Amino acid sequence: MQQIFNTILKNKNLILFISLFVLSIFFLRNRSLYHKSKIDKSIIEISGNIHGISAMFNRYFNLKKINEELLAENKKLIELRVNKKNIQDVELKTIYNVYDAEVVKNSIKSSRNYLIINKGSKDSIQKEMGVISSNGIIGVVSSVSKNYSSVVSILNIDLNINAKFKKNNAFGSLNWNGTNTNKVTLNNIPIINKVEMGDSILTGGMSTYFPEGIFIGLVSGYKIIQDNGYYEIDVTLNNIVANEINVFVIKNIHQKEIKSLE
Image (tube, rainbow, N blue to C red):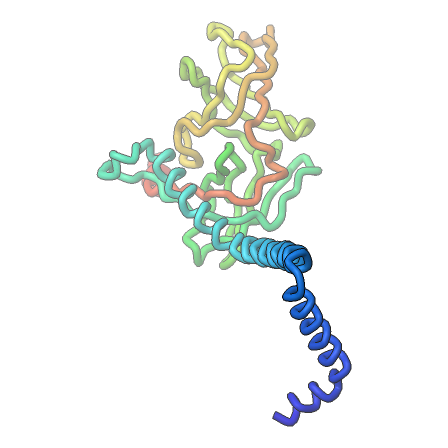
């Protein structure tokens, strides 16, 4: 209580000024309709600005909650997509589990790029799980600690991914040549297949890393390698890997069984 009195005494001049100012506004407002109208408009303007600022802060502090809700909803859609389910097909058997994560480090300037995500063994993340975003593929988990995981990026010359054409299922091997971070190369497609600019390229599903049918990108160039009768195809990635923050880790629940037969 004494602190309150001390604060009042310390600021008595300011309190007196504010009190007199408010009283003068009150009396001025009640003396004429003109002043009343002007003051009321000012009050509304000030009140609107205050509420606007308050709403802005509320939106800012609610942003994390909204983002979490959107991610949860997005995760559900990803789960349905990788398991090839419709909303009505929830009774179908689930083959892939999906875990959401955030990228905390993302290298793109090396020939062997990698990412670190904020989920690890305590979150059921394991080596050789595929990592995707809402827009495309990201990479494959290479090592795991308790709280974090390292991911070999699609922008890594050592990573090869099975991929196919959407239109005819012709499949080959997809990798990065170490130059353009927006493009990868699809090899081992026989020239008997017709290739056109803008053809859609998807994951092939012939590995435990990624489910079949995840969109990778579009054909943006190609040439025939005369020595072996195969195409060398440029694919522009649908996603900008450097900008990805929210990602999803894909677990094939039959991975160990499949690996034991290889």
